Length: 165
Image 1 (cartoon, rainbow, N blue to C red):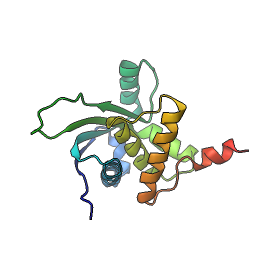
Image 2 (tube, rainbow, N blue to C red; image 1 turned 45 degrees about the vertical axis):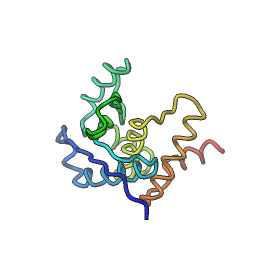
Image 3 (spheres, one colour; image 1 turned 30 degrees about the horizontal axis):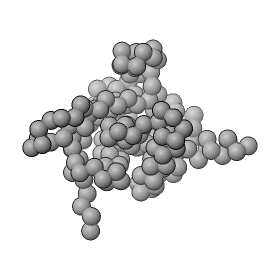
Image 4 (cartoon, helix red, strand yellow; image 1 turned 60 degrees about the vertical axis):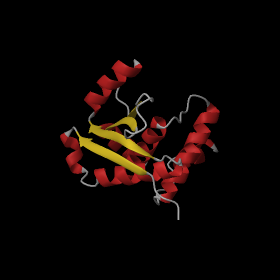
């Protein structure tokens, strides 16, 4: 039986808005562990910061030059640490209001959308991206497969059905 990746995910609740989501930590940890297993990550450490739109807007402006909040940002750790030290994968930041609004607009459960954002952010930490159509298709297919292992429906299904009309 294949061994699961040893992932240490420190979930930091920075905004009191997240008190309304008592299962957020367990949802995120399960999503990250499943993503790590799917991409054969042998282990590592990361932090997931649960924040609000105001903080996310500042981060998005400062790091990406986009002056508006977004749902998730990933900050991969530079590689090159000593081999004996735990691998620091980086940080993921998720905004509550944007996540809640998107879940409602897309008729998704908050927990499912949160898991999707955690998977998406984790994949960025380990080198996946969506800068072009081919990368986006590959990353989305991987997200769908990981989420299916968590019994979460395809988050792109509604978009794909609309595109076919």
